[in-house]
Image 1 (cartoon, one colour):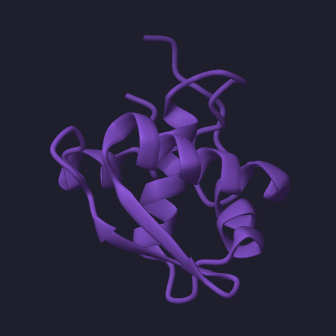
Image 2: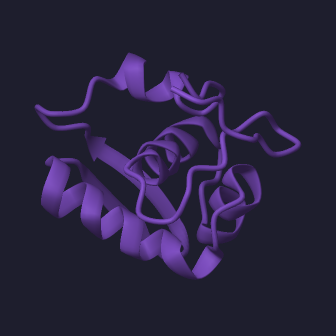
Length: 95
């Protein structure tokens, strides 16, 4: 795999349409103390306007249960498909 560029926080910048965008989204929600669309976007380099879309895809397609209370996301369950420890590594590794 060709190494991806990273942002100032070391988060890989996955290209549009890449599943890595979903993985860094849920990893950022898990990592941040107050995960809002703005804070997830700031950490990951993703568009703030796409965070809800990525959360919806994680819930529908990958079996996660991420809920939003006001502006703050929380992970209720990771589901059977995602390996939490493996996904969390995607926040700082493009391999």
